[in-house]
Image 1 (spheres, one colour):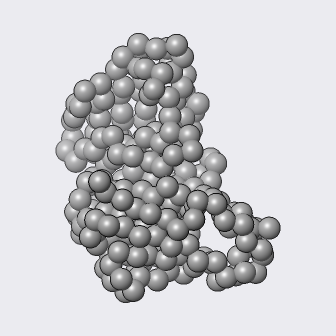
Image 2 (cartoon, chains in turn orange, green; image 1 turned 180 degrees about the vertical axis):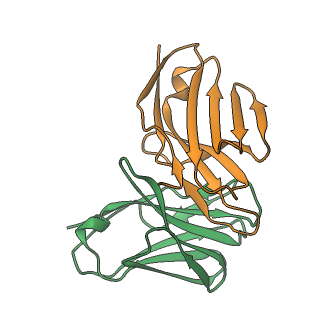
Length: 112
Length: 112
């Protein structure tokens, strides 16, 4: 079982709709969870992070964490064509361990 | 403006050559990482370093070594390049306990 799993997609969503991206992880000791966005030909950049169970909102983005289910998700509201990218879920095991493990990424396409 | 700089954007090497990939960060970060990114496999951690002269193996260290003689510089070494090491290599850095890992622009290595 991979440490961090994501559906590779591609995921196609109409402009203005909600895009939902999912990630599961295997290490129950994981403490920190991150979503990175990577445009084609570019390097990943951080868009959201979450440490506690529940929801965290930042503009059109909401990260959701459920540690009991070992599940983290990213919702993008009012999707825009500029949101078309690959979204990478990343997990850090525990405080004091700096290893950052990424999933394979989900390719998202917003259809105008 | 934070910066992680990789020495080459594109590199072509021959099978059996010793290859050095260099990464420099100007943010005084303790932690530096080398990943490779392949289609369908996401970012896979090769090695990371949490201090000068300290290193830890990631998930796919075979065929690679690293060097960190100075805090700002982290080198990835391919002892004897092989065609299956053709990939995009990404360097990243992050402060200990920090949120965001900052990535370099990537080095596209082709081994022929």
